[in-house]
Length: 107
Image (cartoon, rainbow, N blue to C red; front, side):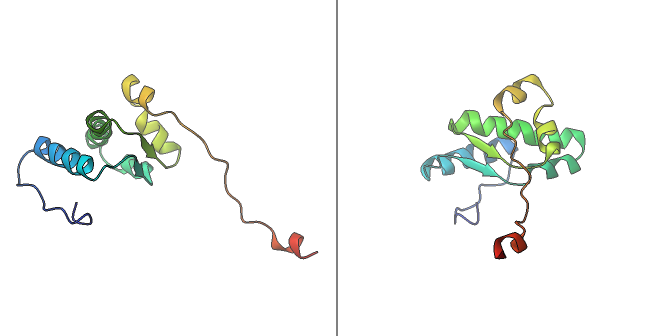
């Protein structure tokens, strides 16, 4: 929120922060939420992992926008912790990127 130059909400419950976040994102006309390195969520305790995944689900519901999350197989496993979230996030696997061999291009 600070990077978007939005005043922080009053301290309080997470529910207030969710409403505030949804209002700001709606006002800014955010059309897609992209999250990189989602696999880092697996470093959290199981309860915190579930809370973060449910937060993504709530944001998706609140804003009716697509969420694109990038990460390793651990990210996919975290999103599949229950049937509801598994159905919301369809995995799309990219092939491993490799640095081209420049010696072949020189000949």
